[in-house]
Length: 368
Image (cartoon, rainbow, N blue to C red; front, top):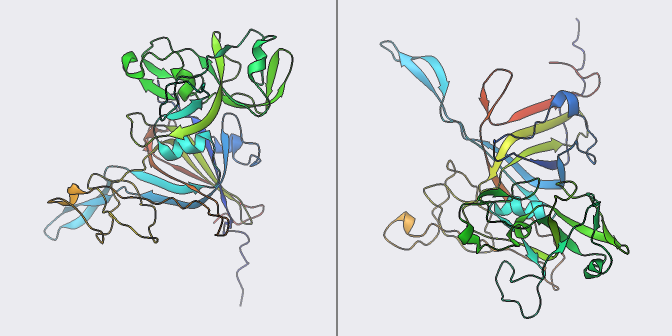
């Protein structure tokens, strides 16, 4: 009696998943393309340009909320044709690391650079009147900012700096390289000369100061500074709950291969969606509270107290952020992020899709 050969390495095994994000051209809604044929097996520490490595993530969960139904016919109403309803997909996970982009993605709206101020500055939650910017001179690059003798004295190693142009009352998307905010009314931002630098993703850290310039640890995301750009010291980052702007990014999640090949999940367009669906969620308190699942398809339990005459009378859920205390074992504080996938038209066949899943089999693995 013959026996079937063992099929090797057909089960992908992973310990952790790594997240990469790249900008979407908001003016044209053109995503950054991930081509599995050209870039699928890249070294995880060196993603292809312009993908940005945001580190390992935890609690990665994918949801498909696209309903399917059938057309029935005949006297017995037998299923004849199957079809898909409105397509929807969501992703949720926790960032292990905190950074400007991680905070922007977890918060979802404009992400602010808190520009350094003088002690007498008018205070504001997102940063008061800042110290004026220092003009970036010709000859600057993405990694070296030339200010000239004297002007460079305003910077020291370790400073974070935001580098971008002055706000000139323009309407539309602002931010060099990456759309950081949308201005629909110049008066709404108080015609603030520093507004673009408040929101820009063009931020770097100073590692060295020379007689006339500063050297950055990493090159600026937008490349060499634009003509007329200035630099300001950044004291901190801040995000906000609320606002009308929505971040939008291309995303790639890679399951590190322990054995059995690599799996990649590519979302051409992801937009942060941290809130609940239109029906709201119940209010719940207590140490056992878990982060809510977002999206219109999710339903929360009704074990909490509500106010008002209907379920909509109390549609908030209060989350407690457990920061490490001296008397407790040290723990890391994760950033919970939730997204909804936006549609993309595949140029190969014109189909509307939300996500691509690529599998790269291990060497000599069976095909099926």
